[in-house]
Length: 563
Image 1 (cartoon, rainbow, N blue to C red):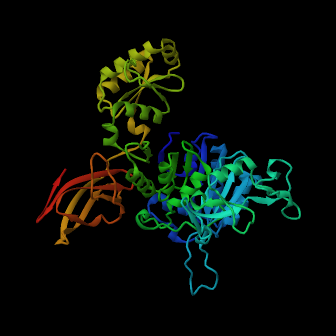
Image 2 (cartoon, rainbow, N blue to C red; image 1 turned 135 degrees about the vertical axis):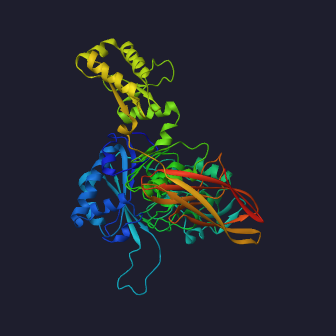
Image 3 (tube, rainbow, N blue to C red; image 1 turned 180 degrees about the horizontal axis):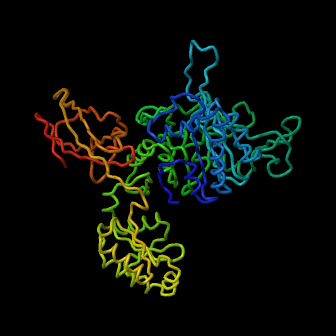
């Protein structure tokens, strides 16, 4: 499966297509067992359908629904891979005992992290407020990827570094520690015999030679009262506190990071998990993409990724988040939907389209772009494939392909002919009358079957939505700004899902949304006098999109023109 890919669909079906032992890290934040309708977040058909499937029964049904998915996740994990499952108090006990312990095994339970989401308290609650989530950490084997992380020092810990010299703030730590040693660390240094310090003897934390180096560097503190010297330990040397099980230093999503997704997880939380359990270049999988935080952070950290969700809006919002943060050095990604836009496919780069459609058809593409004998790929049994990124293919294409297929492998050609099986496949958007008649004649008269396949037989095709923009003035020139209301109107047979706005659009940089999700198609924005480029995207229920860009001259009069 192609990596760096967003996929619209049921994660159980998609997981079954992923190779065994291919994923380094899985983070999943499945819908919680809350049994409330607020679990419906996006509100599109895919999410509602999945919600009904989960709640056909009680907790047993929910656990069964989740368990078969975790089975597939375990299969695709590498032996060094790990899984982090995010849940809350409603079902965490069931999930651990009935799913994770049984699939991964008790011995592969690594840790249970508690994320304290907030410190807010309810004054009217009859019980302590449940303000935490559980994140279970399991490995596929004992040889798993793990990188030690540190949490920031608390204010109280930082106060210990109260001494200061030219190198900064520091505290002092013992150079002598308990335990008798016979080697170098047990020898006398500065006339101090460590074995006489304390009833059971002591030893230096390092060798006398190293202590001499520390002294030359000014890192040893000699108390004026003649007590044992101590080592200076500077605040900037401290990496922090080794990561523990309780995470109370990561707050809920705030400020610019917020995209309007109610259960959106903070980027800092996913950054911690990804850095802890993977390395650059590793493959990270999120089978419940939701608001797209996992893949957005994974992309920032230079890991590869696969993201899956049954909601059109989840996939498209995640796509927009990725577009917003990408630059010239970012790795490209693809989006797989239920339906594909005809115009995008029809006018796509020819070689890219050939490669993509051959793979969708189940074949292997020809890596040569030229001198390929008119053949663009082959099926697993080497039957040739030709792709025409055109409509109304004529008879001459059939004639030329027949000759090319026979030249390519005459034995295979004759074998297929005798077996009355296709000697080759031609893929195109549509075929003209002449091509259809010639393919029929070859089959009847010469027992040569050339299979004509239209693109929409391989992938579903639809027309992308249309869109228009209107601009109305709300206030003029106050504080040097014009307050304008932008109104987008989209049309699609599938129905409109949402709009996304970029009020500082730059063609070279691409679409970088300032407002990712707008359900109404209305956006108020304040503009300075001058020329502005405004872009709006519309997304329909099939996940297809269209973009409209306008030039807006703001200065006394508001003048709008299409770019």
